[in-house]
Structures are given as C-alpha cells and as structure tokens.
Length: 257
Image (cartoon, rainbow, N blue to C red; front, top):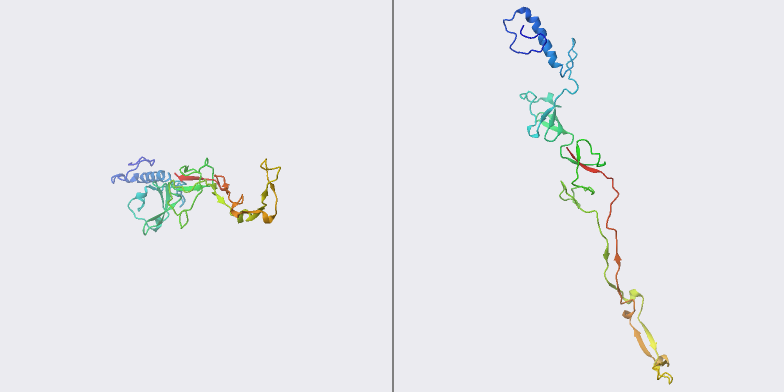
C-alpha cells in the first residue's frame, strides 16, 4: 500500500498505476483520513450529513502586509478579486490598522479603527491611558484651539505647536494728570486786604494793625490755576493678578501606538 493507512502520509504521485486493485479501498480511506486530519485543524469535523467543515472561531487569517503592498489578489497570489471577495480583511502593518475590502472594480480598502501615530484628546487621568495608546507629553498644560477659518487660530498647527500663554497682566501706571480749576472745584476769586497802618505800640516790634475800609484796601486776585489742588500732578496705579485659569474639563493627549 502506498500510504500509511492513518492519513499522515501525503503524496500526489501515489499510488502507482501498477498497485493492486484490491488495495484501492484502503487508499480511499487513507485519503479521507488525511483530508480530515488537515481540514479539522481550522474547520469543524465533517459529518456523514452535509454538516461540518465550517471555520472554527479564530481560524480566519487576514492579510498582513505593509501599506505599500496593499493586496490586489486572492491568497493564492494569482486570482484577481471578484465581488465575492468584498469584506476580506487586511492588517496594514505600516499603520497598525485593519482594513476592509469595499470595492474590486478599482481595488479599494477602507480603514477600520484609528491609524498609527494619531494624536487625540481623552477626558481621562494621565495614569490611565487606553491600551494601545501612549501619553503624549509634548503639549501640556494648555487649552485646545481649533485650526481653520479666519480666526486668531488660523495658524500653523501640528506636532508640538502651542499658541498663547496662561499669564496676562493688567497692571499699569496711568501717568501724571493736571486738573483744571473746573475739575478741582476751586473757581477764580478775589481776597480784599485793607491798607495796613502802623500803631504806635507796634512800631518797634514790627507788628502792623490792619485798618481802613474795603475801598481803601488792596485787592489780591487768586486765579483759578493757582488753586492748591488744581496744579498738583498725581497718578493712579492699577494692579492685577497675573495668573488666570478658566474652568476646564482636564484630560490627556495620547498617541496611537
């Protein structure tokens, strides 16, 4: 007999054409055993009815190729895809994503999942990054701004780009201000001083006694711009806190492994 009888042997060149006919039944049974041994590795064991031979869980194998080697043929590497192949799975080893075949007219694969090196915001603690992601520490302690449009953040974005600052300062000095008489509230006015006369008992001491009437007095005019408060320069100083943080939902940036 050309084969072992237990199905472990395999040769397409046997049995020879000269083998006795009475061994034919043994050869057929050995062939069935051999097929069953191999098929049941990834298929349900075939039964006497039409049952069995379905794929076992986890038995299907996707393409595993780089982006530059996107599959265009069936696994036999010779047969072109047909509409029956739509739904085949390809693991892109360059981008670390799964792709599904969605068109065969012009072979088209669509990504399932998030491409490698994608950076995303997660509302999470930095100690609990999702599996398959790594904390991205290049950009920290800042708000997120949307690029695009004609606003202030229509600027270059990307890896490590940051704009603005957490601090601001409203502190300043207003400079010197001189009030006018109208602002100070002191109007122009006149003081009358009567003509002084000397008394006999004050002559030696240098003292004078003011006497006379208003018509005999000397007018002293006080102009508006000589008011005590009108000509004084003064300044106002404004101080403010230099640190500001808005109410925020804190999270992390993480990069897809």
